Image (tube, rainbow, N blue to C red; front, side, top):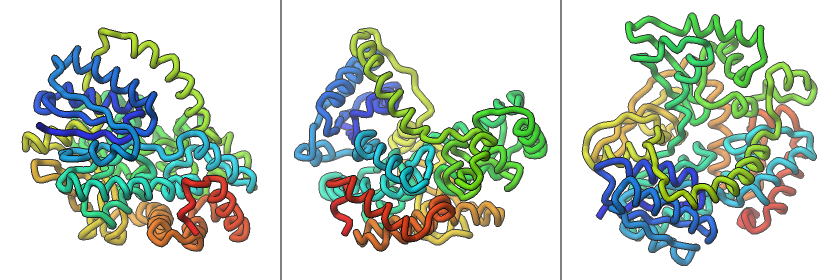
Length: 441
């Protein structure tokens, strides 16, 4: 029987979406689902919700089992065909709070802090040791499994696992699927959605909409550039940073403006506080979301756990479509995060993690060649890739001096702090994270 293991199953809403998708897909319905987490309460909540969905939409054809804690991890993975990873090491408290509050003492402000910047670096460094344990277990008990990573920082985590394990893997993010759709809707160009032709490539959270044409082959970028500039000039809205990218760089990118505000040295600057209002940048956005989600889950969980009629409609998350393509050998295209092996994007080193179109079939994930990016886009990506590669190196060596080098090359941090303050901040963060980062000496 096909076995699907979900690591971090206490991420109940996301587990519900991915595994509900599985149970909504004919080729996947008869499977064993292994739910793994270290939180017994959230694990049991996910189990109850998924069992209800299994009964209501799948005639209980899936066999669902739970595995709690490190002691049961290897059994959760044993014999898996697919492994989905959605862990968050350290959670909102204490780790996310630490990643925001300590840098703030040094005058370093952030919005999301899960992909790049000091927050992304710390998150990557405390997550890699845990994920490394996962893949070592997989190499022993399910060496042929396909590992699908949804955890951020995507470029750092997927890059590390791809270089230092033998497990087949791909990094997945929903921002590719919704990129051009949200852009056209925001600009009042919904009539151009159907049949559009596009190419997206770059790195996770900063992959570029390189081209977009309507169903008749007409280039939509001239109209997009004109409308985006006009919108930024005449109204406040939630995507002003990316629209400024269109104006200054010529192209739109995949992840949100609140994310991209902190991936560069341009918008969050202590000497220019007026930029925060000018570009409508939501500082400390991720902690607010976490607080809202935690509160919302307490209310939502009661409703979901008590809903005996709970169903599910297949979402656009890639995971179930990848599994279906592998099982049926009916090809499917995704935007996947993979190593730049063979210089898929010519401008980047081979050991960089890139986000490119990939074809999926019964032999796995097959990235496509992109070639060169426009020079300014490649340069923007490289400022992030530099930090990603140095963070990966720090995770490999476990040396604080290598962590500092990654921080020194981070665009936003370098624009704000002195090296001495960076070092003090890194030391303070490592100490505050305690056991989560005790391996870094």
